[in-house]
Image (cartoon, rainbow, N blue to C red; front, side):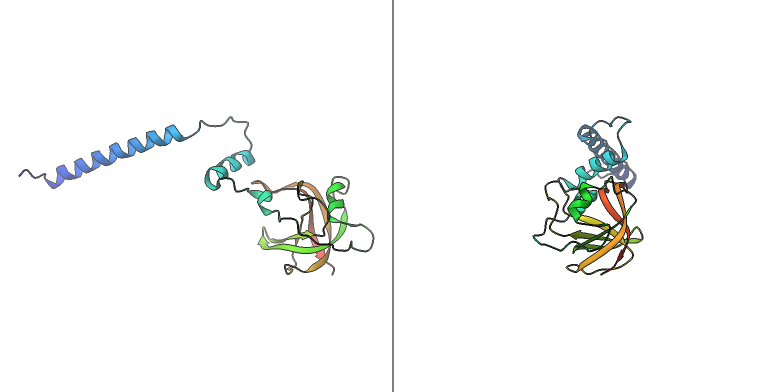
Length: 177
């Protein structure tokens, strides 16, 4: 019987491992899509990377939207009061203005980027075009299911990066009810 010395065994193992790794790398190169053009945005790159990892699961603000809740919440009283649907319809015209909206808290995400993210719905807007779910940022914590009135500054077309963009968002809101 012929036996290999420990040195020859290690060299043989190293060669086998090297050939294995080279083969894996060639397979990976064949499966990897060609690099994208330089004009690709950061968001597009993030979405592409996310698609490869998460399949068809949406990322960013698209992932954060809560399904339409069948409810009717009375519009807030007073000046500068709007429904969720009205804020979407008039978002660009209301940019930078103080607005008041009343709705049911359908989702609460605390302590993200040093603020709480509150999702409100009042029964207005349309799920198909995502005008039914208003995101509000505040330092105040709220309970999911609570009906609240918030007052804050409306921002239109807000982009936090990494796919988190909002057609309208109410920022730095105070909970008044």
